[in-house]
Amino acid sequence: MRPLIVILVLANLAFAAWALLVDRPPAPPVARDISHLPGLVLASEPLPGSAQSSAPGAATAPSGRCVTVGPFSDLVLSAAAASLLTSRGFTPTQRDEPGQDLVSYWVYLDNVPSEAAANRLLLMLRAIGLNDAHAMPVTEAGEARRVSVGLFSEKEGADRRARAVKAGLDLIPVITEQHNSEATYWVDITLTSPGQSVSTEGLLPPAVKGGHIEIRDCPPPASSAPAGAPPK
Image 1 (tube, rainbow, N blue to C red):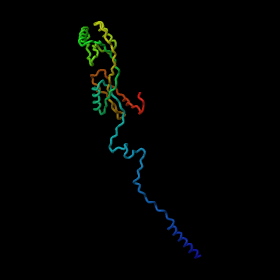
Image 2 (cartoon, rainbow, N blue to C red):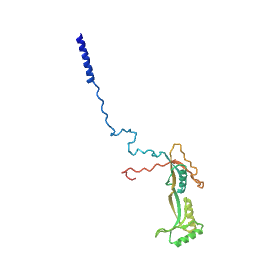
Image 3 (cartoon, helix red, strand yellow):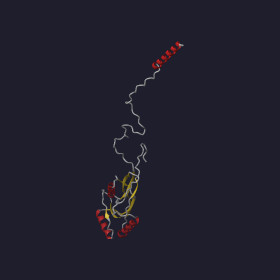
Image 4 (spheres, rainbow, N blue to C red):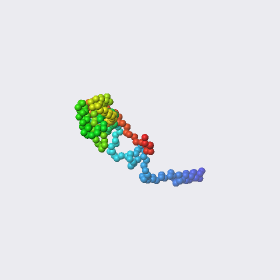
């Protein structure tokens, strides 16, 4: 019995020595220096050094709604309105638009042979009450001389003047239709908040009779034709 106990004690000591010397957990791996590797960047973040990244404190241009104020009949009125809008905190931009086509009717005597003949015609026209008649300047050599008898916004007025010349001087004047585009001027401003409004008070002086001011969205910018597209 005693030898058996000794054998068991020795076996336990041998197992303990094996457990201490052989069955040890492996040493943890040495940490690697990864400071030289590029850092991870989220898809929503701008890349370092890219055009999207901005310096601290850099102002971002506000995105707002562009509205245009007008129309104004000349540059003087639009400049005065732009100055007033500037004093109200806006940054206005002036621009012009082609206006409606204005039709007028010019009555004149053509092919007047000389300056002396033109002067005689003027005396005769004024003698029958047509005091607004005047000789047209000759700008080129060989150009036919003309004596203007009147400019009318309606065809009926031009016809009446032609009949008066025919009855008084037995001359038949020429009537030509002329077209002129009257430009209008607008002032563009940007509204930076949904509740921002624009007052039209004072944008037109009281001396302007029959004028009206409206506020509407700015026209879209003219789009350029794609490269290689044939001209229309």
